[in-house]
View: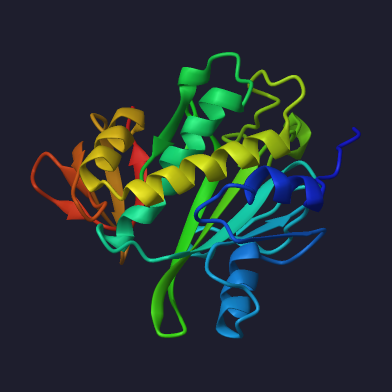
Length: 260
């Protein structure tokens, strides 16, 4: 399968021109982890706030609980951004912000046969129905004594059934996109993320995240340390981004299993 390369100059004109947030974009052919690269570069002033780092291939990407994430070259999007920590809202809401931007963009430009099936599974999964199409990972860091966040999104774009990491994964192509346009999707995702960051409206963000969530309203099992589980019905997201169950139990980080 021929997979077209992204063009750095084209991406810069699409994304940086007219942006109030994005100041620098770099495209690399191959790297271990865009999140790790941004964190390292931020500590040495290589990357300013507002940097977008995109990789054609990521071979040591990490998700929650240090799970690996990788895909064939040019088959997906591996993008990380370095942004100031929001002042008017909890920084723990940034993963939700990235998720909302991802789903908005998939529904508008992902080419899905049924765009409304693009949803979010708390805390960091982008789904199409019950299959995972992408994941989010964020880190809070300091840049020149200022609080900042590195946020990464990995999205399966043109993976075939044979290339999927697990049977519970999917890609834009498998969900109906005949010729997924990675550059168009990336530009739209970053525009949506910029809009959400500049708005910094916690109530509106939580309301939209809730409307896009496949977790809220479901019976779930929350996997806790020491092999413990907490069962209940997911009812809401609080102002810190924590998942709240009907019995009042709230969790800010953890694996969630949707129960049938």
